[in-house]
Amino acid sequence: MSVIQDTIARINQLDMEQKEFQQAVTEVLETLEPTAQRHPEFVKAGIYDRIVEPERAVMFRVPWKEDNGQVHVNRGYRVQFNNAIGPFKGGLRFHPSVNLSIIKFLGFEQVFKNALTTLPMGGGKGGSDFDPKGKSDDEIMRFCQAFMRELFRHIGAETDVPAGDIGVGAREIGYLYGYYKKIRNEHTGVLTGKGLEYGGSLIRPEATGYGTAYFAAEMLATRGLDFKDKVVAISGAGNVAQYAVEKVTQLGARAVTVCDSSATVVDEQGISSEKCCFLMDLKNNRRGRIKEYAEKYDTPCFEGENVWDVIRKQGIKVDIALPCATQNEISRENAIALVENGCRCVAEGANMPSTPEAIKIFQESNILYGPGKAANAGGVATSGLEMSQNSLKMSWTREEVDQRLQIIMKSIHKSCLDAAEAYGRKGDYVVGANTAGFMKVAKAMMAYGLV
Ligand code: NDP
Ligand code: 2IT
Image (cartoon, rainbow, N blue to C red; front, side, top):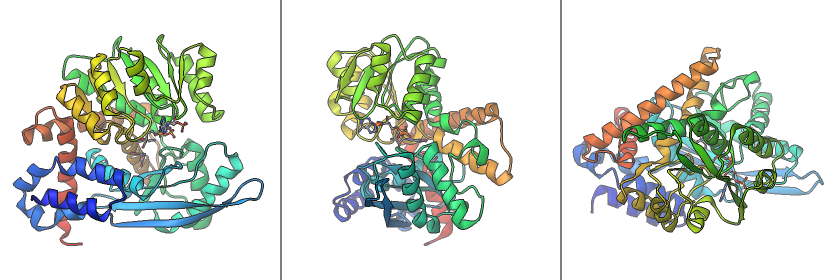
């Protein structure tokens, strides 16, 4: 067995319960076989075994009180995966499905993603199995404060810099940052995704969705295509999905779907900028369900089904798919239906939204497939730009940050293609993203010796 297969087998045995983590490790390592052949020094230094182990993983108790006085306890996590090229960096996820496997998979992916951004950031991830749905503002605040009461001792502007992810947006970052500031008595760039008034960056809210659209545009251009007049299927209705809708619409496409965890809306007319404003208000301020969109605009609404189920069952034609909800949302059968319905490009706004079986279908069909660690890297890249602005004690204009984001997405796209070609897999964005991200981190790890 090769060293790569040995490492995969070791993780599968040691972390038997951690299915998502196993999936992420297998997907990355299987593409890295040629790096092991070309770099026997990596094998000798144990790089493959070391890169799949987090530097450390912290789990903690988060006790908080409901408005009616009832006490609850949730689990908190911060996995500091790899800081070879910069401070640990990655979001916090608040969702009832959160467990160690999910946080480790996200932290592992983040290591390679952050390396691709060209910025000096290591990888980490954290979160809690807390469910923000239906909670009052005060309950959210008390939970965030209880979470930070432990997290603060593990993070720092030069150590580990968390940000948002599912269930953690501007409101939560405000409460988390406010409490950190209070108990540390310092105002630093310890979190990103901050409000503009207290150190946030313009374009950070837009960055993941915009970046995914920019990356998809680069992919399309390799085949002489663009977004103009294309039909785009987008899943999710949160931060990433909203700004993906906004950007593809600006680029001349028609976004025809969004979903939340309870239903999918299909709007054949396209989600115009006015409808997108309604969606943002519905989700970010009123915190309502997606079926209200269908009620307001009199569009079909499919309860209990995700976007990809609906596309398959209703035979909806789409040109481009941007999954922006959650992991493993596209199954094999839904991938087959997407391809049969005309889809020519999939760019992942979410982390690991395609199952391994779905990825196989996309690759065998020779459609453009951009994995999350490349396609959604614009979010963390702009977090990196927020860190730079905090260090400089300056803030850049909207145009300046957007320009940098576009340059970074182009650079990531080129790195993927260059690495894929250098390793004999021209046009394979999976091999390209994994290899380019890995090489940077592995070389830094080699420089340090055995630490
Ligand atoms: P949000 O919490 O803002 O939105 C998540 C959206 O996805 C919600 O509409 C949610 O519905 C929906 N969703 C969640 N789980 C499911 C499910 N099982 N089925 C259908 N819909 C579901 O999170 P983000 O937009 O920030 O994150 C979305 C994805 O993008 C995640 O994979 C995240 O890791 C990734 N990502 C985020 C970045 C960021 O900067 N925020 C950066 C890079 C990647 P509901 O409201 O019902 O829960
Ligand atoms: O998955 C991700 O890249 C994020 N949730 C964003 C992380 C960040 O630090 O901005």
